[in-house]
Length: 386
Image (cartoon, rainbow, N blue to C red; front, side, top):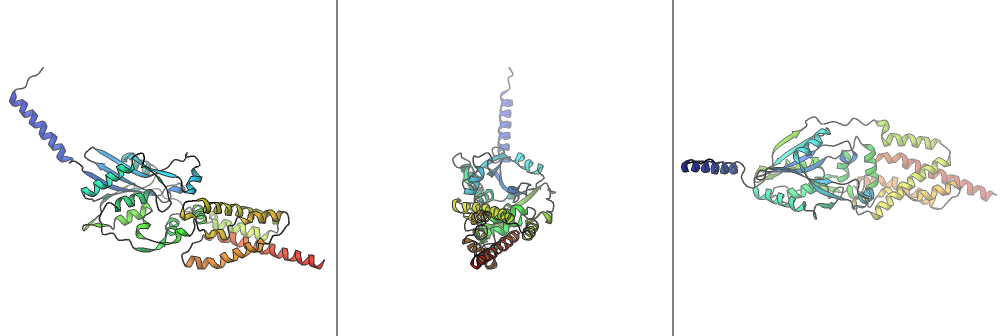
């Protein structure tokens, strides 16, 4: 056992006290740094719009965590049905920040970190809110395409816990405009969205609503002023040369392929081919109708595409195969004509935007209907002559 003189022992104790207080001064209690992480687009269709998360560094307990509201489980029973119905639950997850950033950089994606300059009071509010939302009973939420997603959760978290000079202004764009602008290299995904989503996403929105996408939230944060200072005080970019998606060839786009199919169908005199087209359109129309009736997503309701993509074509296809006619054949033709005539009005008045890739199909349906009506009229005329 070693014995220290009293004076030497006092000096050791004093040195330890100074070291302890020195460490506490270097990392003062409740010292927190908060950043918004914005990830660029990925290869999967659901990654086309990028991703957002929030980073919290706590120097008091030496933690560096990223809170991610975008977690979902593909193995969820009836995943796609729940997604369409609006009953799919997303959840808040927490990751080690180094692991989170590395996972995106390894995919060739860019991550932009914006360090947010907040008061200690505001930082505490945000952290307390995150910890509350991460409780097992609170971490799950029902996902919505544009109203409640991984980015809107962060938008609301930040703007509800700061006092800024930000004022939301109306903009001459809709949710659909923003969604489609990210899908130039994924035209088939864009086609599916424009078919399934109704007029709700074509309303003009404001600046705050536009921050449902990661890039828009990131951009708008750069414009926020608090007490005369920029909200974003610094920016760090991880992977400055992200992987770029290639140009999508025009001959594989819906417009080109449907135009070729339309030409082939119009040149054909086979009623069987017409019936096949009617069956395909009828199935798609039935799918749209079921979505509209049973979904809780407002964005999937009030869909004017049902004027042309109609489940009644299934009945018509069956009757055609039996060489029979039905009165609602005229009704379907009227719906198509009404759709074509009203399309310009609906589009110009921002009621609902339409996908140009549908036009060749609509033209085929209209001409096929007119051909059938003409054939039916000739058939009835011959019967009268007899």
